[in-house]
Length: 387
Image (cartoon, rainbow, N blue to C red; front, side, top):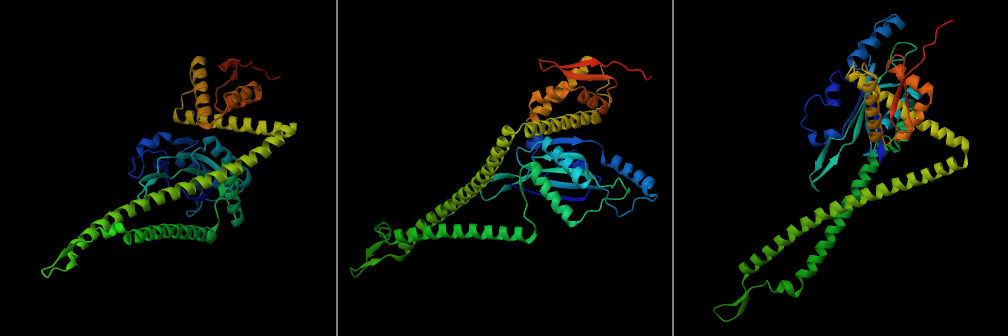
């Protein structure tokens, strides 16, 4: 499956669409529960900060035609997680200085295929980004090769194929359609030939109505014979249409399965090579383990920050309630992103990680760790006096 990412200027009202704050007639409400949301800040608040920083850094106001906040639609898979998109955001910031501050996953949009009467989901994610250059205060300037790199990063982070560029992609699409039409034409030809054989058979001779005229000669009664043939051909036409629909459905299913099979074969090959490298090299194993833990920690932090953004006073509570809240968020993150809960145990074993998470959430001097029974435990850190 191929992916792509394309940034355009974000609109102030895009939050209403992305976070489903309004009802839209083109979405399936029964699927909206599958959507996922994350936000670090509102678009309006981020824009004000960008304008202030631009004035401080460059001495000038932000230009009226500037696009300091941009939004991208990213094609995703059914099993793409918020963790995957946080990882993509991290790479975009490291490689291209693009800072993502809102992410939404939409699984309730799509269309009904009229030919096969089947719902075709339009799986995608919206990434809203801060496009300000922190060195100059102005908007980031990217060249064409940067946008090409953006596509590479997206495909790599989401474990998908990179979309084909420009006219080549359109040409492949046209060739694919031609191939499908040729297959359909061939199938119909076979049906026509089959019908021709039947028309010349004894079966169709039985539809011919004959009777003797007033002279005693046996003649074909044209009206009755034509009526019989019309009924038969009408029946064949209905059957032909139905067969064509079945053929189209089966062709699409086969094509999709073949595509999935190719992708799975590639993934299995990559995973086998990766597993072989990890098992045979202690250094690679340590690097991969740390990468996994860092990704899990980053996803947890962002989830906790989002909860705090939605409910500012959420964490200003008793120690017992705080334990329950953090534990609940941790379990939700694990379920939605297929993260092993033991990864959080590993993360909270390190005092530095605990302190980082608490500091980012402004919990004061409270630190979190996990005990052996997977239950979060809060402890008061000892206050150190400055000498």
